[in-house]
Length: 100
Image 1 (cartoon, one colour):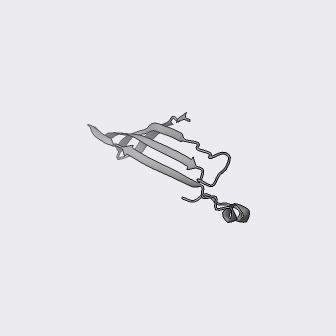
Image 2: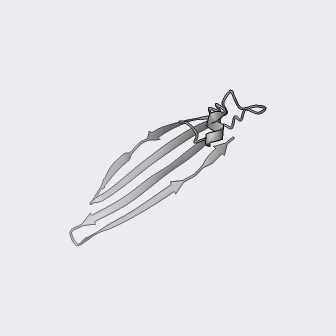
Image 3: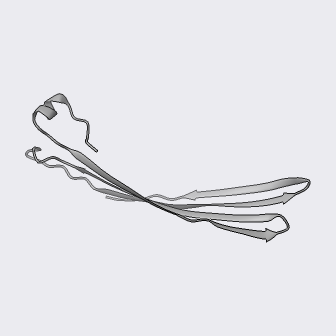
C-alpha cells in the first residue's frame, strides 16, 4: 500500500510504502448437554503486523516503524430451550497486546 504523499514529496521522488499483514485463527466447540441445553465456545486469535517503510529518497532520515499486535479472545454462549420459552446467555472477551 502506498502512503499518500503531497505533490512536492512526489516531485522529490519520495516513495514511502506501508506493508501490513493479518492472520486469524478461529475455532468452535459445540456441545449438547441434553434437556435442551447447548454450550458453545469459540476462541480466536488475530495477529496484525505493519511496517511503514521510508523510501530511498528520504534524506537524511529513512523512517522505519514496525508494529506487531495480537488480539486473543473468545465467545461463549449457553442456551436452554423449553416448550414454554428459551433462555440464552452470551459472554465475550477480548485482550490486546502490542509490540513495537
